[in-house]
Every structure is written in structure tokens, then in C-alpha cells.
Length: 263
Image (tube, rainbow, N blue to C red; front, side, top):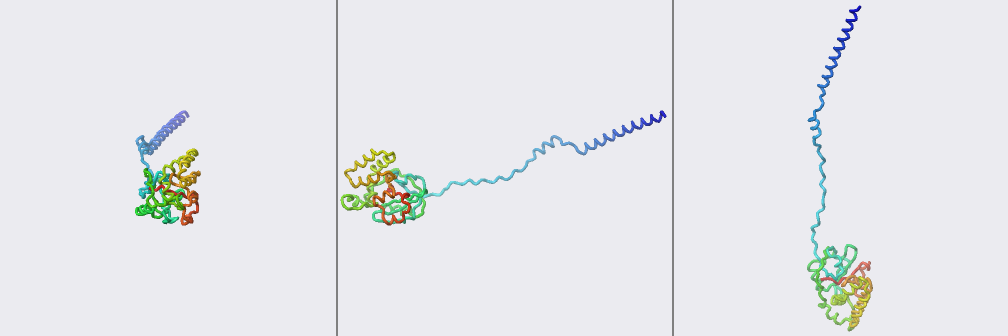
């Protein structure tokens, strides 16, 4: 009986030993079939480059290289305010020679219409330079010289204005203003700051020339003189220098200027 228990104990011990070795064998087999990645392998995985999406090129607009013909103006003109900007030769009203003036207009980007009653020789010169083609865009540029006097075509009318029944015209007013530039420049500067003593002084200084004095009085009304050599359309109508052939095309008088500041 005693040997029986000895044999049972030996059998259990043998089973435990065999189970232990089988278990170790299975564990070693599992580790061999699934090795853990080495640090080198892990680093290589991290360094794999991922291709980035192809960048879309941004289109940068290039500056315009278009060249524009130049319209030269005097610093005393209304167009001097638009130095470096573009104007378009107006198609309405159409360019027309009326009496002593060739009327041509320029449209501004802000909707203003600038009418220039030009002497015939000046108009011919600009036309020869292809600067008066309707709808053509021009670049305004200042010429820092005093505009020339206009006594060539209107000399007789200018001399007789106020001494007989000669009617004031755009050409005569043009000559009067350009030949008295200092008067109208001083008047304009005084109007800018509401300096009424200077305004009255300018008017009084012309007592020896009642006709010119009358014109200066009209243009001394605030808003009538918009540059030393430019007046509003309404002032021009008051002075009676706008021909009916031009009036019929004017639908917005407050957006029209008469400019004598050509060069």
C-alpha cells in the first residue's frame, strides 16, 4: 500500500516536469515566429517619405505695359487735377467748329465731361497727333509752363470787345482768361479759402475794364470758377458762350466743365 502512494507521487512529479518543458517549448516557438521589430526597423518606418500634393501655381497679374498717348495740360487747367490719370475723347457732343472755337470733349472716369473750346490751329495740331480720335484713351500730363497767350485768331475781336457791340464768345473769353492768368489765379486762390477781401480787391482792380470786371464778378460766385482757367457749364451759360449746337447734347449740366487750360 505504501509503495502505491510512492508510485502515484512519482507519476505526478513526472507529469509536472513534462508539462513544464512542453510549455517552455511552445513559448519559445511563439517568440521565434513573431519577432519584435528592432529599433532600426521602427526608425526606417518613420522615415518613409509621404509624397506631398502637387502645388497649384498662383497666377500673379503682371502690370499693364500698354502705352497711352499723352494729353498735355497746364497746371491752371481743370484737367490738372487728374494728372497721371486717363481720360477718353468724347464722342458726344461731337467735335465741331463753331465760330472761333473747335469744341472737343473729354470724359473722366468719375462721369465728368470736360469741354475744351480750342483755337483752330491748336485743334489742328492735336488732330495731326491723332489725339482727338473719339473714344481714344489718353493719359493726362502736366506741363509746368505758363500757357501761351491767345491773340492769334481772336486778336481783332479781343481788342474790340467792350468797345462796340461785339458779343462775348468762347474764343474771346478764352483769350481774356489766358491773357489775364494772374487775375484769375488770384481770384481762384481767394475763392478756395473764402477770402472775400481779396476777392473784392481783385474785382475793384478791374474798374478800368468794365467788361472784364463784369466777367470776374460772375466767376467770383462760389462754384463758378473751378480752376484758374476753367469754369462750370452753368457759369458758361450765364456768360452766354455755349453755342446751341453744344447745348443740345448736355443732359447733366452739373457734370460739365469748360476748360481753357490747354497747352
